[in-house]
Length: 471
Image 1: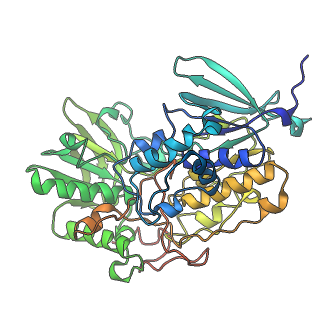
Image 2: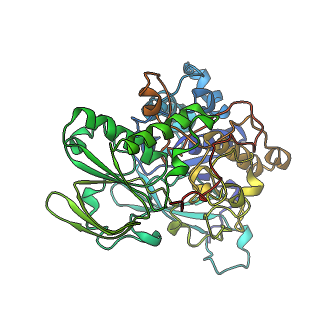
Image 3: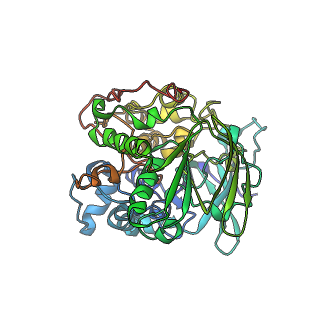
């Protein structure tokens, strides 16, 4: 029997988005061997799918320090630190060059989806000798070939963008939701660009009350100005949109305040129809549209829509981790030590304090959720926070406990984002947009440079979801 020494195995990094590639860069600096597995055909594949969206965070917060040190010897030109990249620019000007560096390219497998992670030779119930075992990572490639990869540790940076919350009530899919999939656009369609024909002159239902919804709603309102017959219905589960409207001029983040102001003006002017306390119970697809059935605050819900934008937020894919011993909060499905800092029932804004390996550790040593996936169902994630997470994890895996525990960042002071269209409406360039981190999910939002970590900006609204049930 051949015995594999755990420390001689690579560290498997799941996902080649910004945080996954940063993890690989930090591991390399620590003398550890990474193997990056990416389900898409290229690095940053998830971000490329919302490439039309502009981040609010300037480039100075979007480039990891270890990644920069890999890139600079190649002749890479650093973007203007104060410029605001789109998702497409983040891929083409940063992630693609980083993935092409010899150190990363030799350790990156694209078109490789992870099916499951387990301790090698031990299912979840086996404790004897568990701490000595490495990990077995089961993968499938584009041709359908299943391959197991052995690893000394696993860093899961796969994000949440591929797993949207359902449209139905109580966190469950509505009856018929799977059959209605052809009418569901995804959370961030390119309304004014590549997807314009799908929305122009037609009715669209937007479901959700985050900044992805706001971005799409303002795009649809703008589209309606030049495309007669374009109508918009906005459905939210709460009793009030006050949390998304924000504090207006009281918001210390003007772009975010302007976003809420513009959206509220559109609702008040009748440019879109707002339905509150919406529960969608059934979707009935037809030839050209889907019938949406359920209830609202005031009446039964029955409308037809050729397109539904499911800006309903995201949740982590935990099915592939069923054999790993995890310590997750029962509410947000984030590591238990991190969850109280990000629970959306308590927080509507504010910077999460920098945190590292000690907060992210699970009962199975050497396994970590990082990036947007570490936030579980919580909606706001700072890309810079993800970079600090993987720096700390790499230090811990290399045995440098002091460096792992020393987490210091000059973090911006809120994780709440705004949208291009809010400022564009006034002819001002370069606001940002939030989509569901991170990045590799689209919630890559950092604002308020220089504020102490943990201090948020005032929004003029109560924290958390306390405003959702207002009449």
